[in-house]
Image: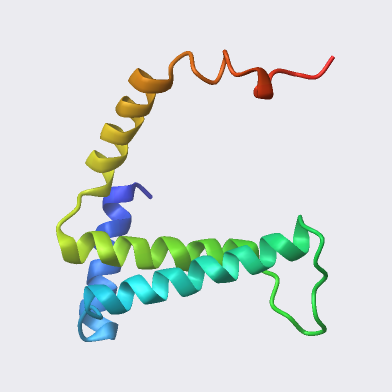
Length: 110
């Protein structure tokens, strides 16, 4: 599905099953919580922490939760994520088109 389709699907779901969007500040708090859950899994799977017994470890589900809430915030604030992402890519391309290639920290170690 496209980003635009995802925004429409989430909006339809909210209207049918969610009654209404949570207010923007509540969604910001939820987004922060979901990002924290991604961080917890990353710290355990790729970092030095270990999973606790029975602890949830589905990174794809947690990333989808982040995306869901991000789409909710975009929908309720009138942001077209397709257009916003394209503008962001254009900005980064113009600003950083050589920066990373010239960064000695990113060059392969010999």
